Amino acid sequence: MVAEYDTGFSEKNLRRIIQFVEVFPEERIVVTLLRQLSWSHFLVLVPLKDPLQREFYAEKCRIERWSVRTLRKQIDSMKP
Image 1 (cartoon, rainbow, N blue to C red):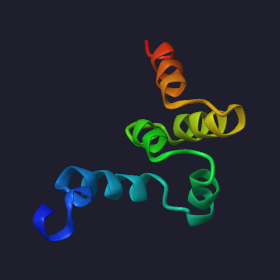
Image 2 (image 1 turned 90 degrees about the horizontal axis):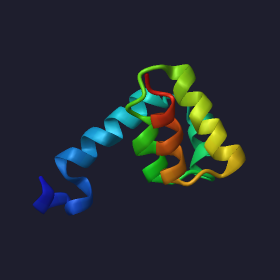
Image 3 (image 1 turned 90 degrees about the vertical axis):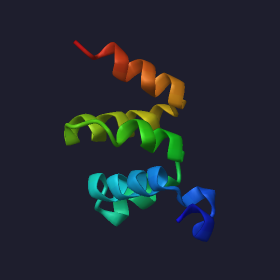
Image 4 (image 1 turned 135 degrees about the vertical axis):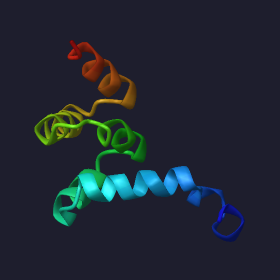
């Protein structure tokens, strides 16, 4: 598959894209977030199980312009 579609479409990346679509199904929200967050931000947000938690951190990233490092740090600081 990688040889046919290039390395950007490895099985791992395709799985991440599918997860992204499942977690962020609303196009208008995605369009808004894509203007302000990087793919790396989304890779940190997608594994969060709680949709409210995911929305909270996405909004904080958007409003406060958190880097991916800051996002990870904030999420890790809230873990029990």
